[in-house]
Amino acid sequence: MALAMLPLLLLGVLPSGVQAGKIVLRIQAGNPREDQEQTVQIKTALPAGVHTNDVLSLAGLELGYDVKLDQYYVHRDVKLGPKQIAIYDVEINDVWTIPDAELVTLREHTGRLVDRLQGHLEPKQIEQSVQPLQAGILENLSRISQTQRDNAIGPGVQPLQHIRAHASNLERLKRVKLDVGHLENLVLGTGQDPGGMFGDDRRSPKPERFLDAESTANKTAVFRVTVENTSPNRKRTVPVRQDLPEEIREHDVIDTGGLDLGTDKERGVAYVYKQNLELEPKEQRTFNVIIRDKWNVGGPRIEALNRSAADLLKRVAAKEKFTSVEEALRGLVTDLDRVSQENGPDTVDSSYVAFHRNQATELDEIETRLNRIVMALPPLERTTQIGFKVKPPSPRTTWLIIYIILGFLAILSVIFYFRWYGKSRAEGDGGLPGDR
Image 1 (cartoon, rainbow, N blue to C red):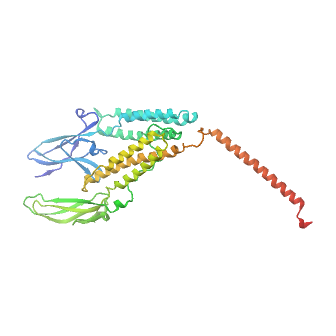
Image 2 (cartoon, rainbow, N blue to C red):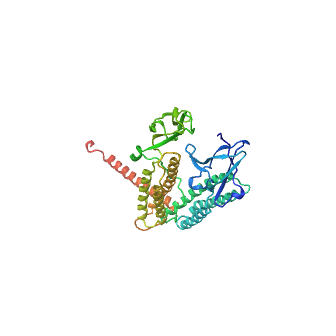
Image 3 (cartoon, rainbow, N blue to C red):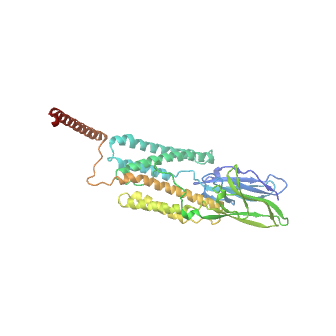
């Protein structure tokens, strides 16, 4: 039977398919022939950012993952009669909307931070630094809300417009969280609990995905290549070629399983192949290629993050005054436990790679939150004092003290000079005993 490849149309969201919190992607395939049935291969990529948990309904299609593009897609081979059209409505979560609850939380949190700083900072610093930060945060939050309302999916607004608007809002949200993090650090510097750790810190280091650990150095995985002769009565000789995942190089292949090994010089991708493979009718053959596992390396990283979080929690809890920081650290430990208990596929295929890439992304997010708390610790620890708690001197007082010290040193220098000069004169007038 002929295999027809027909372009698939992503028609977008029809008004009747719009529902709160989700998007319906209508995929249409058809058989253009008027005289015979055909098998049509359906394969279309889902928008970037969609993961398995975001797919609510496949409408009878299957979910796949493109290792090279790091993107999910839906696919199926379907038999269609002459001029027949098949329509599939795939439902996914609207992951391109920032929840209103998050925007409200950031707005209210900002107000509480500014209130905590009143009376602890100089009025001039409040006016020139704190208030402009607050105004910028509130303005960006309002713009995010307005942009989301203007680009909410509905009549006249296509999914692509909705997704692009979300990308610009993410940039605004990033600025908001940096400013909120600055206010949180100011509050911590005054010895107060900020009431939550919702901001970011631009000084935070980037997450490190790969750790040099003995437990992962010799870890291997099996990449299976399956070839089948679908003919019920004909013997066939077929060429076999299968690209390996992009992270794999030739030196990462430990055993080719009977296949040959090569590298596509133009794309830099390693692959296994066999020029002429003979298959009997209906014969299926599987080759087990042993490769170095470069994805399932989250274990050592989870252990390292757990140790760091436990150490920070111990240091913060000893102060008994920063409850929100403790809660944030306990939340990180809970998230790490959840990630460590997730079980992925055993066989190295596209699902295996997707699972561990997603896990690495989750750990990136957890490490980012942990690094943010690490950057907050220095001002937090500077609040430990011995004796009476006093306000730091103002800049004017500080310079006055500096001038007094410089003046005192100048007086000492003059006194030392005259004493040295007088002593030299006395010795000069008296002369040396041997000269008399």
